[in-house]
Every structure is written in C-alpha cells, then in structure tokens.
Length: 268
Image (cartoon, rainbow, N blue to C red):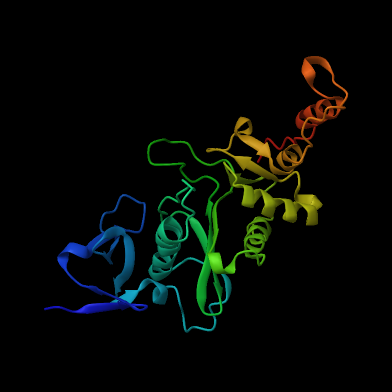
C-alpha cells in the first residue's frame, strides 16, 4: 500500500525505510518513544509524527485550538512532553539551529521542570529548570545545590520580541524563597544580553543570579552581573595608566571587585 503524508507542500511516502523511533524522554525507559517520518534523503529531517492513530506534520503538533493555552504553562501531560521534545530536539536541534553553532539540548527527563510558551495558538518557546536536590546525571550521586535555569529557546520568527526576557523573569519570580539562582554554564552571548536587560531593570536580583556548573558548589558559581561588567570593560588603550604586570588601574579595581562583590549565602 502506498500512502503519503502531506507536510506543507511536500509529500513523503510512508515506508519502513523512512520511519524511525525517537526516544523523547531521557529516563532510561526505552518504551518512551514516538514514531517519526523522515525524508528518504536525510534521517535527521523529521517531517511528521504518529500520534493518536494518525500522522501529523511537525508544525501541526506545535499548534493548539485550546484558547486557554496562552503564555507560559507548566509541562505536565505526556503530549506536552512531546511538544517540548519537538521544540528542543527537532525545531532547535535540526531546523533552526545556526550551522556554525555546535550547541545541542539533551533530551529531558520526567524529573525536570519545564514550561512551554504558547502564543497565538502555537508553541513558540520553552525553558527548563534543574530542580534543587535533583541528580546531576545518572552516572553520579551528586545533586544540584540550587535551582538552575538549564535551557531557554525561542523560535526564530518570535525572537527579538522580549520572550526570552519574559522566561527569565518567570524563572526568577517562581523561586521567591531561594537566595541564589543558577543559569547553566556556558551562557551564550544572546543570553548574556537577556540577563543584562533583566538585571538593569531589577537591581535587587544582581547578587542572586549566578552562572553555574553542576552541581553548583560555590567554586562552580560566578555572579552573572559581575561577569557582565567584566565583559563590558573597555579594551586596552594606548594611553591607559599601566600598573604592575601591564594591567591598568581601572582593571585592577574590577579585579578587587570580583572578590568583594560575591555574596556568601552558604545556607543556600
């Protein structure tokens, strides 16, 4: 039998050669998979998913007719996990990731906290959080010492509209009783820009937000606002006053600030 699956203006024939399984949860359970249709030329080009007994183009899976789905909503249902998987692994991982970018998002587990951003009946972005006390990975007994904003993504068409800033604000406001919050290392240049806008508007958060490596012990934390200040320092100028080892007095004062400006909340 030869059937076809419409994908926008493209038709892809269904056959055993271009249907594969995609594990959409990173929890060691191989039963959490969905059938995916890819183009015959490239297995990475997923064009449709088999859900509820029929094939759905990827773009249709990301849409909803439920008008209550608006803004940032917590990922709770299995279908919402599928949407999160599509946004991170297919939309970002394949379709909208810059060719020069070697960053990939790992698949998510049921223990992770995530929110999808819905706008105009469509999933346009998401963020995920590593919960305080959750395991860093399956190979170690180490746990995160603080909540960590792990991934943030906004689809290309909706970028530069303040949605990433909205997600950062939501993350910080949803943790009112945590003295220190983390953002996964390394921050991208665009994420530094989002953090700068946020911290310029919220001075009270400047000693609360840290760039961290797992599990987030104090030696693995760097204050985000301080990092922004250091990144914005002017480059060496020919007429700058040089101190010992060729450093200017302006740079030495910021080096001192690096140690003095770090708050110590050891109880966090």
